Image 1 (cartoon, rainbow, N blue to C red):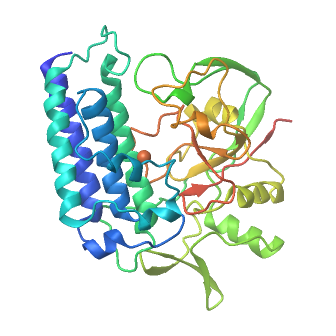
Image 2: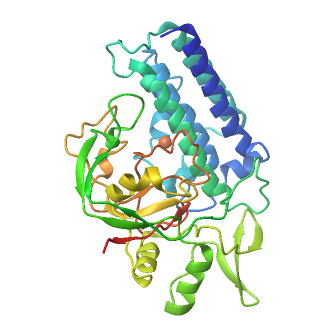
Image 3: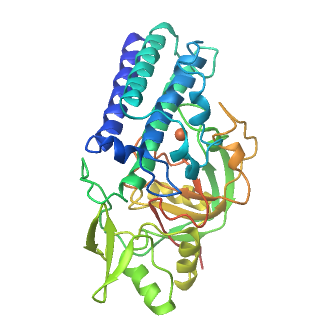
Length: 366
Ligand SMILES: [Fe+2]
């Protein structure tokens, strides 16, 4: 690969880091270290974990160097340390945290200068710069996790425009029965769980052109006694939502956000519809409106595609396969556009609502 593509990687890494730091610029160390919720890490953990993941892959694995601090890897391992315990760990904080992030970056860039990352390189981690794409995606994905927590802060000023926009289309889209290509091709960056690309046969179905709105969800609650999304409250007979410490009347034409899978499923049944399978979602994705506003719950549990091979580590996908997790598709307003591929599979527990999750309904075609 040419020097200019190394320069491009360097620039993209710098850009992602500017965005990460931009999110926490206005916060003091006490806010970075504070545990706001047992289901979310303190922001200092996310920051250290982003840098530690970079050290593990770009410095230790690719650069074959010893870790800067041999113990750190344990504290930043997402599987070893459930979120509720992360505030108690002896993680890096304050000035030490910032200097670790800068040290790792300096070393990672020095390693980048020494490696070959072309399309004919034998090491699959380096081929087409895979490991650098993975690192970029990882940091960008953590920004969304950090935003889940930043929403809980009392006086957070969003550093750039944030939130959903109103949906414009209405009605349902008919998708004809037939064979559809699902998953990522062998070329370009994708996670292991998106591969291999394969064909599936689908029966004809219909899918909503837009995600379910706040207004429609409020009607469902009033008629059926359904449960309110996270951050909703009543004020003088009206529904309001609270984010970043500000209470605002609900915008009826924006997509409903912060609903659990159970709520999404209950809404779909009430509306005489159902959640789409993730295969239906992907088959329809090219023609869908308003994708990228909210993560859209599907009826599918998170499973390996036939022929799945874990790469580059089992803990990204494989350990989560099974019945416990439901797949979400599409991406939210907080998801960086480069992460939100059509084949990208997100997953979470069915009761979770701190994520930017919404609903799009489907039904069998008549
Ligand atoms: Fe991570």
